[in-house]
Amino acid sequence: DSNSYTLKNSSNISLGSDKSIGMYGTTLNASGVSVGNISIDNSGTIHLGSAAAIADASVGIYGTAGVDIQNNGTITGGINSVGLYSNGGTLNHNSVINLSHGSVGIYASGGTADINAGSSITVGDNGAVALYANNGAVLTNYSSNVNAGTDSVIGYAKDSGTKIDNKAALSIQEEGVGFYTNSGHIVNSGTLNSAGNGIIYLYGNNGIIENNGQINGLS
Image (cartoon, rainbow, N blue to C red):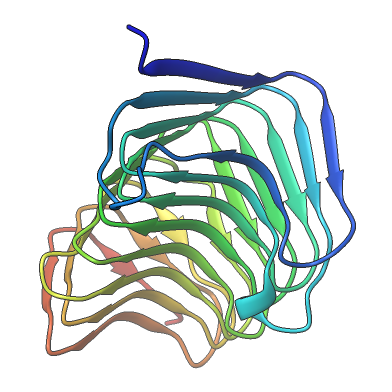
């Protein structure tokens, strides 16, 4: 198919400045209509520098509608960085994301995102979010190794039609939030654990929360 392309990285990409993107794919024409398909496959290492604010973040891999992101490599980043950003496409995370404070591990705006068993996502303190979904995205987590630091959030679902479905056992850090919905939909069937203080396991603001899992805190 002349409108189908594949972009692969098996080497090292290092971004020292903010507002940079390691791998980028778009199928959108001048009218904003998707006119093809792109597969992005990362099996290498992408390192992101720090930014003064999350609005100026560097992004490991970015794709629009019509773009399928497969992360089989390692993404590391400094303060206020974003590991994977799918804007209406599909995303599968199969490997490692490790970012510093204020960062976002996976950002899904529309489309679908799967965090598969055996993969890991770690973000730091101070308002970091491991899994961020909005604009009708459906994000499913199968990994028990998704971690957010102190005063941070594991999963955030924003907007009507947006859904985060957690199927794994997870641990919440000090002053942290497990899953937060703002008009979105949270489904939890995993065990949520914490030995910290000031924990909010599930929080809803005009959204839907379905909990079918066990919650274990300090006794």
